[in-house]
Image (tube, rainbow, N blue to C red):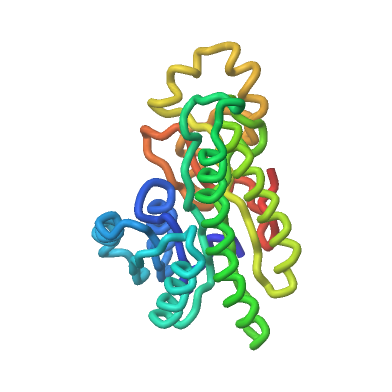
Length: 259
């Protein structure tokens, strides 16, 4: 069973009111999964719901600050009350690189802010979901899917966004550990790793011989792909204008995503 095969089940998507998170929620709801979107912004939550009114799965949205454990617990309790169970948790909360400032010029506040936003959200959401899933497993219902979005930066780094790369590498390490720890409960842990695609945003670098020679071999998919190459793999979450496609390109069912 694929990590995205949750038809008829219930999934939580954190940070799911825009971008990749919204794409996750839409893909799950389209496949018949009931979805609870956790986001900080009421207006964005309502906008997300408006785009998903006719999906086969039931969709709701809750205000939740995933960096706050009390807020996460409240959102999980409310979701369980509404649906009765949670079968998947898709953690997409976080912020990106944060500019082009050199490592030696970063402040303590900038460093801690990046780590808190990217790591705490995954930790709190996964912990709340895993507690529910393991308790359910103890009652004879072993099943669960924990999925975090990762980044190519976690594999080959990134100049002047090194603190972002560090947080993503830490998330990958957490997911690997959880895959081992939670396997006996029937709970799998995976990371979604982006790969480059051809798009309007990448068109300019396609002709850069140095980039193609030096960077492309370090990208897990080993080549630039056409968007349609990835459409049937697992989940297709991108637009024509996006630099990345985000799908579990290398998923091993029942285990950790292989790089």
